[in-house]
Image (cartoon, rainbow, N blue to C red; front, side):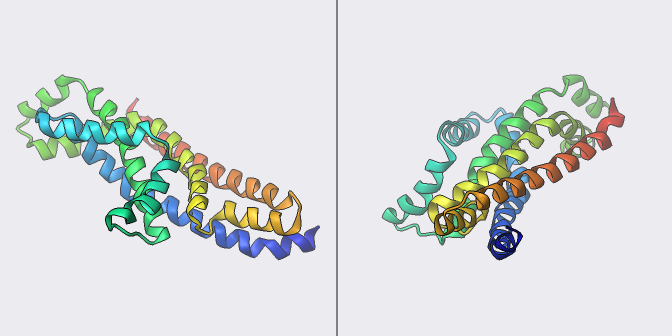
Length: 214
């Protein structure tokens, strides 16, 4: 058995690299975008909030799998063509930006109005108020929810299999179909568990770092 594991492990590790790449770039891009979109949802400019709310409703109301298929197979019909990896990233970033935006919107609305009034008394600009007072508190409020979405992202990354990307799950399925054994899928499950465990530990440490504000 160990000989077989050593044979399929390189392909699983290669697939894990693709999974981590999708995960890493989605987190790096969609969280800052989620903050911006979340801020847009709290403005008094009605046309902007209307457009953002429609976008968030579409992204959260339809399956990510459908969005992946639409981006890669549907958009070429109107002349918009993505490579497989770019299509996956585009769909993931659009989807997770909407979820993060809703999380940050809730965090922003949880800040008492007194915080803003105090900032005005101190003659802080809107940018200073946001950077020094609002955002640090929002981060602490939303960290558990952000953590849940990050964990979900690791598992959702397996959906890129549907557009033919060589991720971890695809590597496991190929080995299983070729060798007619469930062992590759067991190894895939173990790798996913390890990835989520690492993220869980990192997020708990981050939450502990911000716990001094209690």
